[in-house]
Image 1 (tube, rainbow, N blue to C red):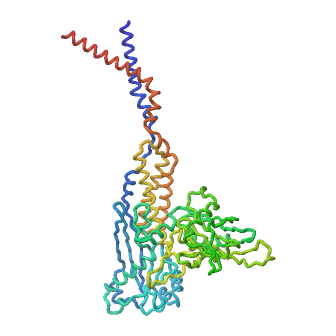
Image 2 (image 1 turned 45 degrees about the vertical axis):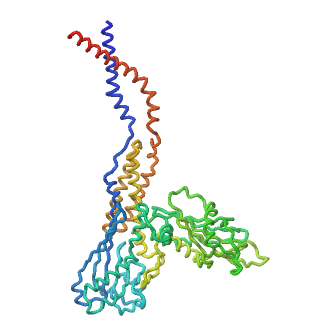
Image 3 (image 1 turned 30 degrees about the horizontal axis):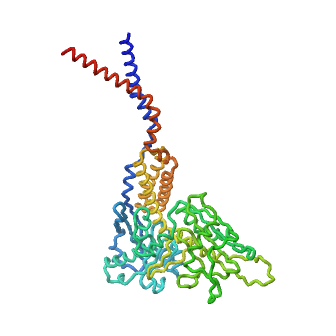
Length: 560
C-alpha cells in the first residue's frame, strides 16, 4: 500500500511538472510577450542610404535671327546633362537636366515682338503654360531691343526667361561653340529659376552636418522656418497707450487683399491658418533712447534682441496646435516715446522701421502724428495705412517661409512677382528645396524610430504604428520617384504625406508602453507568484531523480 501510494505521488508530481512545463510556461510566455507588429526593415535600411535625383525639363526656343539654317538642320532636338554630388557617406545628390531645342512658332515670334519684356512674358504665358518645375528659355538675337542694353537675361513672373544671344552665336561660328556658350548661360538661368546645389544641400540639414563658410550663410539658414505641413500666422496690434490713441486697422480686408493671394499660391507647400488680435497696454520692454540730432527716440540693433521675450508673454499660447507660429506685430509707440525709429549697427535709420527675428516673426514700429493741441479730445482716432504695413509684413513672410530674395547675378533683370507676391519660378524653387527637406526629415525620423525599436525590445509595436511606418516608407519611395521623373507637384505632395505619417508614428503615445519597465522589476513581480508553486514541484522532481539513482545503484549492486 505504501509502495502504491508512493508510486501514485511520483506520477502526480510528474504530471504536474509536465503540465507546468508543457502548457503553463508556453501559455505564460505567449500571454505576457510584447506584441511587435511587422515593420518594413529592409526598405527602411535602403532609405538610410539616400540617393536623390532631381530632374528638370528645360526648353530652349530659338527666335528668328539666332540660328542659321545650317545650324537648325544639325542641332539635336534633345540633350541630357547630369551632375553627381556626394554629400556624405549615406547621402548623394544627382541633377538631371533634359534640354529640348526647337525654333519659335509664328505666334511666339509675334509675342516676342511686344514693346516690353513684361508684355512679352505675359503674351507667351497666354500661348502655353509650362508645367511645374520646368523652365522655358527664349533666345533672342544680339540686336534685339526687347531687353535693355546692359541686360542679358530677363526673368518674368512665370517659368519663362528671355536670353540675349552673345557674340559666339554670330554667323560663321560652329554649332559646337554656339551650344557650349549657350549651355553656360542656360545653366546660370537655371541656378536662378530652378535650384542651386547650395539650396539643396541646405535642405538636407536634418540629415547631414553642414559647414557654413560665412556668418551670412549661417544666418540665412536659420532665418526661415523648417518645413512643416502647416503654419499658424498671427497678426497683432500693440497699443501701449489706449487712452491717447484709438487705433483702427482693417486687418480682415488687408489679409484678403495682400496675404491671402500669397497663401493661396503657397497651398502646395503647406496649410495656413490666420488670426489677429489687439493688445492694449503692451510695451516692448526696452526703453528707447532720445536722439537730439533726430529729435526722436531710437531703438538700436543691439537692443532688439531684448524686445521679443516681454512681448511674447502677451501673445497667448500656441499649445493648441503643433504647427509653427509666425508672429507679425505692429507697434504704435505712445506719445511720450514718439516718434520712434529703429537704427542699424551704423546708427542709420532703417527705412522700413521694422526688424525680423529668425524663425519667430517680425515687428514693425508705426509712428503716428501726435501734434494734438491742449483741447484735443482723447483718445484720438487713428486709421492705420495697411498698404504700407502689409508691404513690410509680406517681405518678412517671404523670408520666414524660405522664399529666396537674393540679388540676381550681373546682367539679370527680374520682373515683378505679380499680384500674388510670388512668381511661378519662385514657387518652383521653394518646392524643390521643401520636397528634399521633407524627404530628408522623414527618412531621419523613420530610421531613428527603427533603430529605437530594434534597441529596446520591450516597446509595443501596435498595428496602427506599423501601418503608419509602412505608409511613410511608401510615400517616401513615391516622393523620390516623382523627383526623379521631374513631377515636382506630386513629389511635394508625397513628401508632405511622408513627414506627417513618420512623425505621427514616432510620437505615438503607445510607443511609451513598457519603455521604462526594466527586467529587474519583472523578476520582482513574477518571483512571488511563481516561486511558491515551483519550489514543491522542483523538490518533488529532485526527490524522484534521487530515488531513481538509488534504485539504479541497488540494481547494479545486485548484479555485482
